[in-house]
Length: 130
Image (tube, rainbow, N blue to C red; front, top):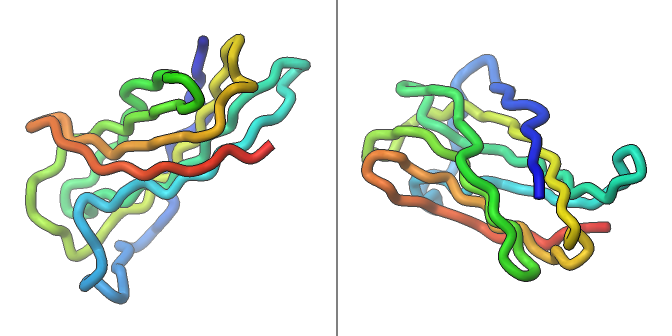
C-alpha cells in the first residue's frame, strides 16, 4: 500500500467565518470526498479533503497516517491547536492518492483532524464513489 500527498493548499485569502456558530463543534471535522480512478492503469483512491483550522494560529496541516482496515481507509490530518473555539478559520484543501492490492474492497474513508498535543481527534466517514 502506498499513499502520495498531491497537494496541501490554503484556499482562502481572508479569514473564514461560519455564519451559524451554534451548530459548530470544534474541532470541525474534515469534509471529504473519495473516488476511485485509473492512474496509469493502476486503480487509485483519490481523497479530497477540506480542513478548517484556527486562523489565529494557522499552520499547514500534515497528513499524519493513512491505514487500511477491511473496507475502510482511515486518514489522519495532524496539527497542533489550542483548546479554544476560534472565531475565524483558514480553509485548507488536501488531496492524496492511495493505492493497494485491495483497493477494490474499499467502501469508506474515515478522516480525522487530530490534535498532536494532547492527542485528540474529530472525524467523519464518507462513502467511496467509483
